[in-house]
Length: 417
Image 1 (tube, one colour):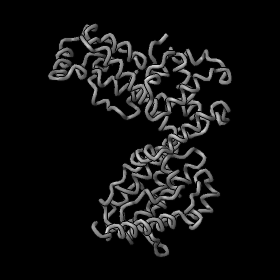
Image 2: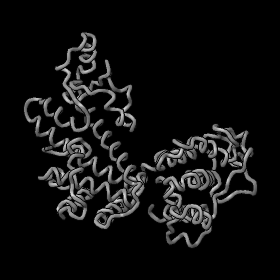
Image 3: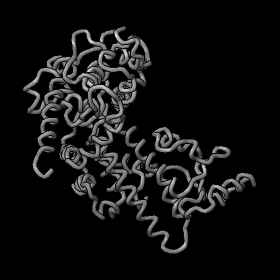
């Protein structure tokens, strides 16, 4: 049995889950532990709970509660992933700190990270001299945690590499083995954990029924994902593709003024509404909000407002493509032609390049009215108090944008400022 749980998806951990009793028969202490994991600052007993079996089950209660209510690409799912990674990183850090009070102990590293992938020590291999020489050169003048002391079969790292957290070109590989340092093991383990959680959530989210026992945990996830501190950091990541103020024409996008349907679309949409949400709603809204936020003339073209296609390339398309990637499943993975459709809805015709000379080859779609969004994609329509005063998502944005600019102007004109 595991002494400390670093990977809730290790072979031993999944064995515990397979033997677990039905949810209604689990003791309350396991549900309490799952709830404590959602805390923004996990306490010491969460980092190292006394019962590894209960610890494993509490992780899986967390995943199950998330999957029964929230989409795998949702803000709430991302919170669960972050919370889990934070706890596991704290555990790894504590193990390493306690293990290396004196002499560097490689056996501790091997035992810990073997929960994620097979790990061996370089010194146990019979390697060609040229490989040993390369490893010595690569490790020269490095701190102990950066020395290439360990190896992992490359194929076992594929889920972590596919997550995009580490590039294959950053790893020294020879004869099917990746040679790694302690620091790279930590980052790859975190990537492996994230990939495992995402895959698990996608698998179990197909079970749409919500289990009564999981309701309090799902409620806690929802509350935590709505905390201002988390929302701020989440939205910074969502809108990180924007290059504010780089391009000419109109003004930089102001995401804080986006209507709820657009914010929901940016967080990722499930398969039933993906095409409408990304290709029709988001493409039209983002392009008008960036290029002509207060509306346009009838039969307008993007080239009527722009003289430089970089605005579309650098600010409009990246935001749309990021949202398409967050869909479940990602929109272009099974419908690659939708990428071309996005250009078509921008008025550039059936193409995959931004050429303002082609503007007008198709109509530049105007954002659909709220009643149509409500009819075509009801899950995206979660009105706030400002929605009742407008009939179109762009009107919502224009109104909030104007009010925001007036407030900024008034604040600047205050005496002493």
